[in-house]
Every structure is written in C-alpha cells, then in structure tokens.
Image (cartoon, rainbow, N blue to C red; front, top):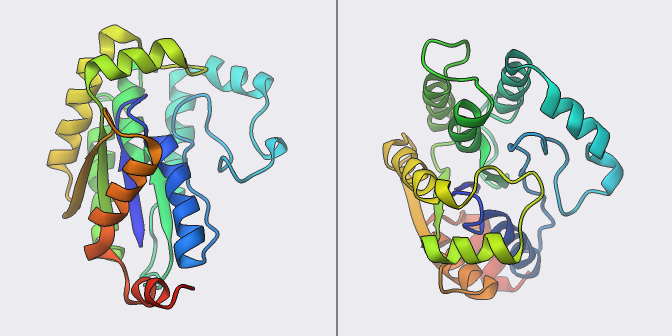
Length: 228
C-alpha cells in the first residue's frame, strides 16, 4: 500500500502518521518509516525512527534556509523525483509520504520564491508529471487529505508552536483552501478525507484505518485475519 498524506500545517498529518505506523506494527507486523521531509529547512531523515545524527544539524538547516531560491528549487525537485516510483513495484511494498510534492507545491512559491508559473520547475507542472508517474506505476496509491477547522488550528499554534513554522494565523484559511484545491484536482483516483478538529490521535488513527480498508492489499488482509 502506498499512501500520500496531505494537509496544512497543524492539521495533524505528522501526528497521525506516527500513530498509523504504530498501528501497522501492532496489526500487520511491519516496521515501517514514513517520509516527512518536505518543509524547508527540515528536509532530511525519516522521523521518528531514525537517530538524530541522520538528520540535518541546526547549522545545516540554517545553510539550507540561506540558500538561494534556484538552489532550493533544484534541491527539492531532485528529492521529489527520487521519491517518485520508477517501476512496477511489488504489491506488498509499503510507502507513507507526508506532505510530499503537495507541501513543495504550496509552500515553495509562497515562501521561497520558486516553482511559480514561468519559473524553472513550475510546481503545477511538476505535480502533473509526478502524478502521471504514480498512476502509471502505483495506481493503487491512496491520497489522504487531513483537515482541521480554523479555531482548532489557532489553538494548536498557540499551545504547541512548531520550530521553523511556515505562516501564521492569518494564513490558515489560505492553506486550507490550497490543500483542498490540490486534493480535488489530483489525478490520483483513490481519495479519503479526515477531520481531526474534534478527534484525539487514537480516534483519528481508527478513522484512517477504517477508511483505508477498501484499499488494503490481499497480504494486508491475511495478516489482519491471522493476527500476524
């Protein structure tokens, strides 16, 4: 199963992904990582499973932040295509991507001055290329939009602000609309949505796994039935 989880910052994508990989370990007997390294300058490693030395240091993140827009654009474009499917993969191969090209498409042009129309690496065109590749090699990919209402996001920003946060309270509605727009226009056909506004992590993981059931592979179903 290949899952792309998208949603504005503070909607709960990373928290949900962490809970989901624990569910996978408990119910499917798989130990997996997830890719959540698409927001500059946090562009390395596979949290939370990898040790800190795998990730960029604070000094290295500053170097990324200080890079020119063309350098940022090239760096992120290479990363996007490195993580895109290149062949017909095994049915049982698992992949969980948080943010992925949606983060880059939405945050890059707004905050880092790259990927705009008529610029090198126009992210709207890159999205189209990547999704055509996904639908060719991994058509069973599931696109998951994680939503949260504006008032709850405001509470989360105040109670637990993120390091290197992108935007502020004034951007909440803009990001919600942009992620929803890109979700609706995506070429990926398997789509589900979750709203974390009034749910805790366990409730959201339960909702996610319930909505994913139609997309479980035969191997996944056998593991669930056997308790392996």
